[in-house]
Every structure is written in structure tokens, then in C-alpha cells.
Image (cartoon, rainbow, N blue to C red; front, side, top):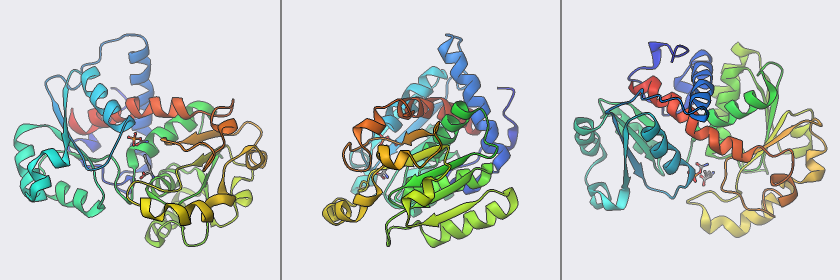
Length: 314
Ligand code: CP
Ligand code: NVA
């Protein structure tokens, strides 16, 4: 993996704020290289003999399968650990879990509710910890999203991504990734569902260095104006189910449909981290239509996480 430098070796990925724009670019370049190898049947056992522990506190299809398949394609092995089936679910502490796993495996991937639990795990691990979604961030998703934008448009230069919907974990990580890579980003949410102020502040600081623009608005049409990619996510994330009814009402004007897409660039792509709720945040016409790249995006989770694991764990 000629494109990867050693600066990431042994690091954690808790949020993309931990990585430089150059490091993110290198991961995406390496992912494109690995994707080609995989598609051409070229063996690439960069993690031969290594093991990844995968702790899940929430459901998953893409993350679980892409990390597990990714490890086996890299010549390593992955262990699925449901929180409730290990002693963590019975009250063993996060630090003890981190220290024990560090004696057995070479990396830990964790999907958790509290971001602070992932920070605590990392602080007590002597091996890399990868955040595979918390209530606040989803950095692996953003890596795949930006990779998909790059493949579709051939460049990040002067590109704009518009995110419409909930100012959630996915929105936060996208904002950070765009800021770091110099991609213009506009976020439209209903009032009261904006991204966290600390994430906006962080991104403002980053864009003041990278020269990209960052707009946070309540107007979806303003956000998608001249966008090269239009992105949305579910209105009710895992853990917020009891707010579902209130959210259904609040988010109605934020549906990504053919009309809203018509305010973006003609050749804009549509992105969604999946799982999707057709008829809510996006119409079937858009997500199943010609502008949709959602399955390329899902596939890219595999390639970009393989590149990430090689960078951190090889
Ligand atoms: N996008 C994503 O993380 O999907 P899963 O919840 O299925 O892992
Ligand atoms: N925002 C969603 C993303 C799922 C991949 C959630 O947290 O449920």
C-alpha cells in the first residue's frame, strides 16, 4: 500500500478530527487501490494473522459485514462480540475490557451509544480502537461517503455536498470530513435539530484553514443549491425511537424528493448511509433512481475500512 504513510500506525479513529486532510486523502487513495485489487482477484493479505474484535451495542448490517469480510480479505480474522453476550453487559468495566482485549487481539472496532465509552475504551487500550458509530459520530461512514463523491466526480476541488435532515452522528462526521478535505458543505435541518454547536465550531476552524465553505441553515432549498451531492439519513436514529412521532412531523419539509433534487446541480448524486426509510427522509423515486449512488457508497465501506485497518494495524 504505497499510498499509506506510517503516521497513522497505532492510532485510534474516534472522530475524523483526529486525522489530517492529507491522512484522510491517503486512506481514500489506498481504498481505491484495494477496491481494484479485490475486483481483480489480487490477493492482499496485509493483515495476515491479525485479529479484530468488534463490539456492538446497537444493530448493524453494513458495519458488521464489511468489517468482518474486510478482515478476512486482508488475511486476518474478526470476532463479533455483542455487548450483552460479553461481561461488559453484566457490568465489567470498559477499562478492564480494553486491557483484556489488548492482550488477545490487534484492534478493536466498537459501535456504542455514548461517545465517551469509546473514548474510555481507547484511553485504556494498547491497540487501535475504531469508532463504528456512536450517538455523536460515524467516521467510517464519512470516509466511505467522501470516497464515493471522489469516485463519482473525480475530484474534491470546488465540490459541494448538501446534507438534509437530522443534525446527527452522520451529519457531524460528514461536516468534519468535508471541512478537512476542503469540500463545501451545507447542512439543512429543522429548528432544534441542528448539529451540535461544538462540531460546528470545530468545522468553522478547519474551513478557515482549508478554504471550504460551511453553511448551517433551516432551508433545504438553500442548502442543495448548486450541490454536487445531496445526502440524507433517517429522521429517527437508533436510540431515539420514542421521539419518532414528533420527528415525523418536524422533518416532513426536509424530505429529499425529485423536487428538492431539482434545486441541486443536474448531475448531482444522491447519497444515504442506509438503512433508509422510503417515503420518509427520501422518496423511492430518488433513492432507486439514476442519481442514487447508495449501493456504491455501501460497498465503499468495505474498501475504505480495509484501508483504515491496514493504516492503523499493519
Ligand atoms: N450505514 C451503517 O452504518 O449501516 P449499519 O447500521 O447497517 O451498519
Ligand atoms: N443516524 C443513524 C445511522 C445509522 C447507520 C443512526 O444512528 O441510527
